[in-house]
Length: 179
Image (cartoon, rainbow, N blue to C red; front, side):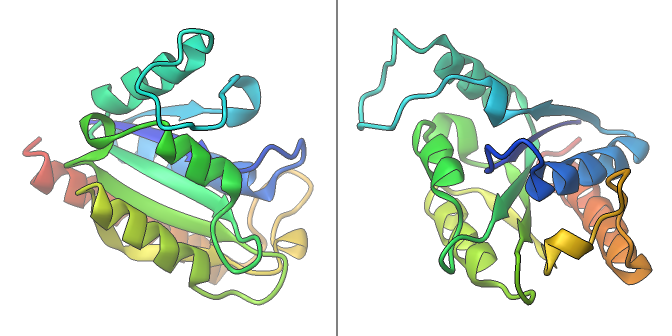
């Protein structure tokens, strides 16, 4: 089972990236092969609706990684009540070949109180591309105080939710992808 992970933030000290790394470790501990693609290290264009981006080899790298994956962890900061433009653009660079039939686990990171706005918007996008979203989702509110200096979650209950998230992603991926 192969799971790909991306975080829709380009900040150097990204809490979204921290959340992705935590989730990826938990999924890997359950036996899945996990590849984290750091969007901060890829050169991706703004999606203009074209199928090919010959001047941007990282588009094909992104697409290939998703085609080879059985599922994905998508993490987004919540900006203005929705997913980040970085994550939306990354998803727009892909299509049904990369996303359809994949099992998706969704996480949002917020500066304020935890809510489900970005997660609900991501569910709509994933449904549109015929992906399967697991019911468990994690919203990390007040992210500026949710992690310690080593990037670990300070709230044990939030850590338990991340464990259940990982277990659900691995179990659902195994069933839906018949692994």
